[in-house]
Image (cartoon, rainbow, N blue to C red; front, top):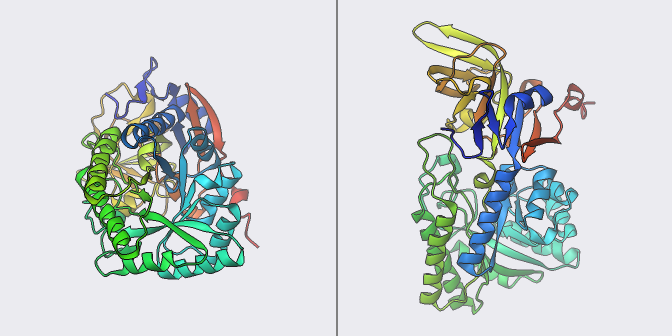
Length: 432
């Protein structure tokens, strides 16, 4: 049984993704290679869009969190699916604009947007800024005034929710670099300042409680807290905010033991909490935004590597070394993230070989997985690491001057190149 429903074992005994033979992909495009299943991506987008229709009467929009995976092709796909975009840098915004994505469906996040980024986003006519702090609020108001424009904003609020995830990816508690705290009165002060800003319109609030979350209750609680804040803002200012962004962070299946909540079930239960609070507080139901990223692209992707050596240390461990590593997937060295791997050309064989998958970088911590159970392998075999569609390509680096891999999209079993493999010439392009 394969980890995800878009993976198969074909008649040759090879691993296939979206109907495409991974061994053929490795031969045609080389390794390491990111492979993305476009049909899977579109399927999840349509589920979120459908859930907005069902749960909120269409009064909402899912925004793809482009930090999870950003390139021109994914922006084109998101546009075709009628999604919005969440960007967190000038570079992500520029990528979206170059792909022809409508600026009005983009929200710009980040805890330290630069003057240049703010100016560029205003020039693009971006839909919303998600304002993180008072310094940004003042800078944005001043810059918009200089440009003789007006912009809609949301305030990022820390709802004080413990998301039960890795400490590096929890973002909703009071001790976080992101957003305004409720407990200190900072959030209310920010709302009042935003309402009185000359060139800004405060349309709503935003929260994000963390990433890779499997429970629904923290999301329900966050919705209740945020609607309570909207009620309090109305009581103190007379202004009823009309938009609520509930963020993302929905967990995916990295290994067999992971049991993510079906995303449409999450949407249903959180919408129940939203409607209940609106009735209790006598609020007009706000327009709802959500920001799925990992859940759209994570399980849709895998990474292919060529095995270079198999090194057995008796009574210690066996290292299987690959032609990639922390340069294309830094999540294990950062978070000890769990993955499943398959020897793609032997996918129909038993996975009873316990190994440590080692990267090629000059770092002892450059590992992809320890204690992994894979098929017996030899140098030259192709290893597939599963569920790598999110935060792999987007976090890739050139450490050790290693070129970043190519990205291939597969649709109806047919591959197409979306991002070219970097060359050595690319590595020195900006050197003087």
